Amino acid sequence: MNPSETYVSQSTAGYGIAAVVAIILNTLLTVAKESYPPLLAAMKSLAHHWMVHGVVIVLTFFVLGYILSKQPFARRMNGVTLAWWLTIATVLGGVGLVVFFLTA
Amino acid sequence: MRELLLMIHPTTGVFAILAALWVFIEALNASASNRARLLWGSVLTAVLMTATLITGGYWYVVYYAADKAIILKSAWPFAHSIIMETKEHLFFATLILSVLLPIIVRGNDLVANRGARILVYVTASLIILSSLAFEGAGAVISMAVRVGLLN
Image (cartoon, rainbow over all chains, first blue to last red; front, side, top):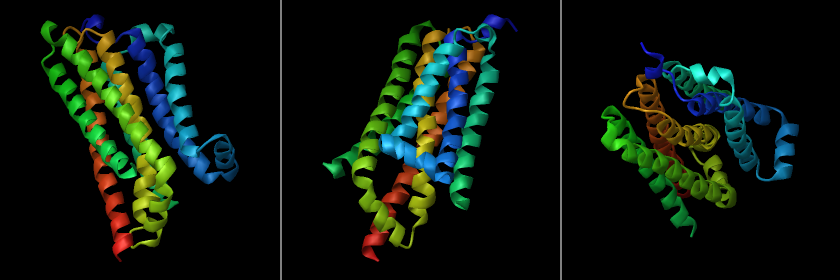
């Protein structure tokens, strides 16, 4: 198949991968702050811990997305592959959270 | 005010779901004539999901503590310890996906690019499915407050 029919734009590739990272980081940060009180306390010292959490995740997405969209690999990212990564990240991220809170 | 926020939050959430569904269907029928609708739909998804975050987040930070106390003492403590905890954190994933959607739509020719089209289908589907789960979770949480107050 013609690469122009499957390769996504650089911004899509960069922000798409950043989304994968941010979604996984979202679950890891949740587990970390709920399991390690000093981290939760540090986040609470800045503002409501949930707001700090959200800012970290959203900033990660935008900053990483900007950086990654300028990288050489971003010119050759297959849209279907990226879709798979997003699906896996979202499912694993969601299941991870449910399992954590079920067992916490 | 607080009751109004708690009604605006799921309302904008439902409209965000409808906007994402609109994008999914437009992408299925991608052509030169619906490019503008695709972009508007994707931007609307992101804007409505952000509104859902702001209204729900404000309510959560300012008012939820009282409801949390009621839920934890009720017969449905799982409504907070599992369902609300999951919802308040997993929502960020849906928000990220919602912001990603217009980036994908704007940056690619969905008519010619099958890979990008599939990416739109998947991203929109993930937004819709996770948001429907949140709507249900919110209903359980609200019911848990009622269970705590009535029993």
